Figure (tube, rainbow, N blue to C red):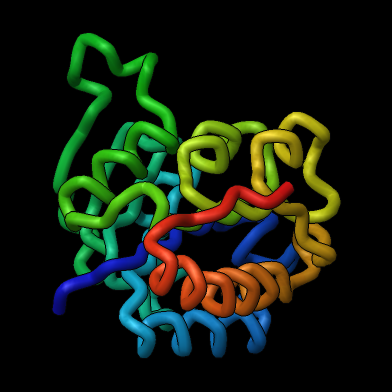
Length: 184
């Protein structure tokens, strides 16, 4: 399937609630996004096994960007796709750089990439994405990096559903106009 849109999601405090579960509204939103042809990517500080365990029941078809973007794995199998820790510039690896590389590999333009996060390690991907959403309880630096702040708070659930709903509604306008606004 050819993808024209991509969404990157942080796990802890964003997709996952405080108890480690996924809110049913968030899961339903991901299924709707997938049906709409959105490539779903996970960008997390977790290592592969912990990330894989968290996303197994979800329709994640993009890569897992693990260890804050330093390790890239297949979301279905956990197979290692890239280990950027072995490169000379590994300290420069961020979720934002990994997301940019994933979008380029998938042929998705930056303006058609969304990101959702809640913490300081999400700033680079929120700043890079064409449209980005910070959880309401995120630190100021995170909210400042995002194009929008959600009403949902970290760890409570529902934030991913809110972001997907806003993004997909707005994306129809972007696709028709050929450009993506960066609302604040």
